[in-house]
Image (cartoon, rainbow, N blue to C red; front, side):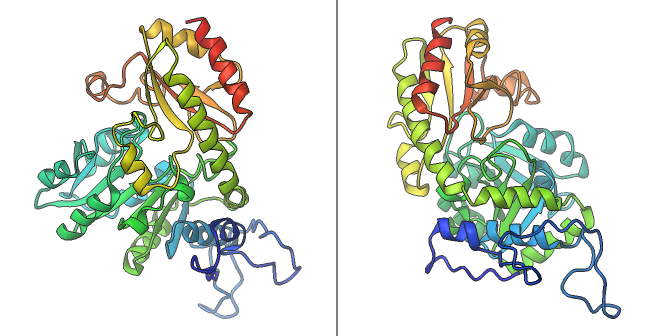
Length: 389
């Protein structure tokens, strides 16, 4: 699939609609068809039209992968069945005896995968506060082969300087991977800052409608792409054609959605920061965030994710969570609808209690994914729920 929608010639919104996609040559259909086929006829053994078996490649998936790669300023994109499938594949770039330095604050499912699954393959993990990149340098060992960066982190919204961390990784011959799920390629493009691999749980902002589960890896290096393709084909956790279609459809409105998430996120954060029952708001778009300057430097917006700390304890958090109406009490994030959840009980329960405490994931913490509804309605919803706290 051609991916010649050059960034220097076309804007993000245009590329989101057209990159990797051409009208169907047979019918002229403007939307890429969903190719529901497991295999493809060959003219002669080994001679085919670029497609042989759907685990290896599928025209719908290829169009989606090319579009997402283009938006991330990458050459090669790979669609997976889930974010965890993408993570598992990336970690299989390593071998027994290798060492990974990972963000100490990360999505609970990522920690569970590393600490309860991949670790048993003989891979060593160190969980480090990467907000100071010198901590990364100090943690490097002779067998360190990868640095795993989440920025902003989930759920405490800490930032990592991608440019500096990637420079250290390159200097030491270490692969750098950045989970860009919270920002999406509209607001942050880690490959442009020197990272080797970009990771997404496309379930979130890329999909954007809470109706599809998926993951993705994007790279520029041809040799690295060949290794990932081999793993994707061999391990088989591929994005299904209809899921690729849904995600590609969603990419077409990514810019519009992210702009509204950002507008709403800023207003909700400003409202909550002034509320007498809220002790603190962690949102990179607020000047009170300790890394606000870095957020402005490496991203093009702040998005709709934030974490608040209520005054009180678990009872106050429960009252807030049980009294919202527009905000839905649910795991996940990044959909057009607003969600609210309790990390210690829900998304980060797999992290040991002592580790949660050290990271500040306590009973007063509540995470919000601010959607694209009318922002005044969202603020009234929170005001009503907080009045019950």
